[in-house]
Image (cartoon, rainbow, N blue to C red; front, side):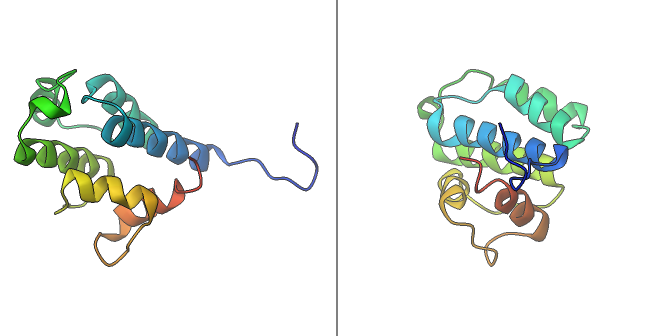
Length: 123
């Protein structure tokens, strides 16, 4: 249990931490893209995913990252982050993964930075 001095996360912080952990699992640890995880990430973030974008991403469900060329991997990862944050991202899959280890605000936009920064202590 938590002591009186320890504060629990707010629902918003917990949600962001959960999304960050899920993104980390999907991009860095897991071997494939999951539309199920993406749908849940968007729901937790309160983001309505455009139908056309979801339909495109859905085609990659459960396809292993190593079965895709680098350009496609990078594009999928960038689109996921863009949908969740509403900001254009010009980063590769590996650069997005590296952000989990140490967020560099100079490389990314404010909303993306805040999303990543809020979850950096979660895992």
